[in-house]
Amino acid sequence: MTEQEETPTRVGKVVQQATVIFAVAEITAVLAQDGYVYGALPHLCRALGLDAESQRECIEEQPTLAKVLCQFPLVQGRQLITTWCLRADLVPYWLAIVPTRRMKSEKRQRIEFYQDQVGDVLGRLFGATPATVPSTEVMLSSLPNV
Image 1 (cartoon, rainbow, N blue to C red):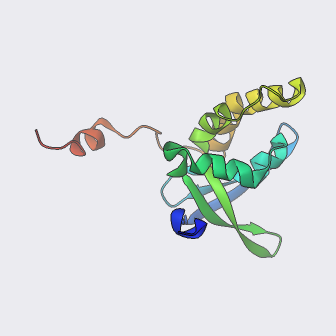
Image 2: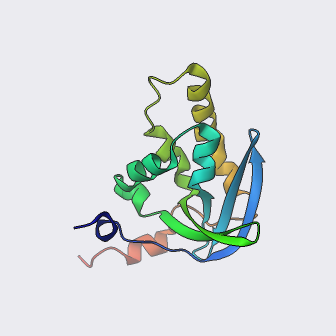
């Protein structure tokens, strides 16, 4: 089985796109049709000095993260570039699994700062965002009849 066959492509629809300067780095985010905000993985990785492809592979290994890693067509200049994006509310979870033990203190502190702040910053870019936890009604309706 090839890698493409193993990794299902999840493509999201962009409702709105915005760019924010956070901790002197430019990060693009999208409000998706599903109502969630997603941060562009290459931008986040570049801001943190991480390799985007190896981080995408690590995210794919985590089922919770893999479900919310989607490709979106982002406008860059006059082009549409298909870009991997991670749901903003789970960016801290992703950063928690990045091995920082051998990193320089500066880089480790930057990752910790992003872990604490960037999900919230991206989430507020488009005003009110949906709750990250489904309503009780939705959770109860998804339970099997017992």
